[in-house]
Each structure stands twice: as structure tokens, then as C-alpha cells.
Image: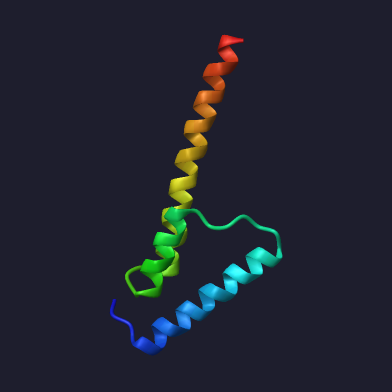
Length: 77
């Protein structure tokens, strides 16, 4: 999905604003993986919906793996 330079600049400003709000709120910085997805959005390679879907699946998988390890360690105790 090609975007104009004007749209790319607008997305960059929006991302900078979101980072600033997150920092002011005391939130952690985005992961490298998240930053890579953001860069793809800025360049018109992904939609926001695709980023949300990708991150939801990514962190759900991490949570499931962590839960599995926790259950395994609980059985050892």
C-alpha cells in the first residue's frame, strides 16, 4: 500500500507523539520488535490493524510459553 511522503511524515509525527505520551506516563519503551513494526507502518507496509493483530499474537504466544514453563516448575516443587 504505497503512501505519500506527506502521509509518511504524518505517521512519523504521530509515532513520536505516542512515544512521548508513553514516556510521560512512565511506560516502558517499545521492544525492538515493536519498533520494527512501527517502522513498517510509517513506511506504509503495514496497517495499524495488522500491527495490533501481530503484537497480540506475539505476546499471547509469549504468555502461553511462560505459563507452560511456570506450570512445569510448579510440578517440580
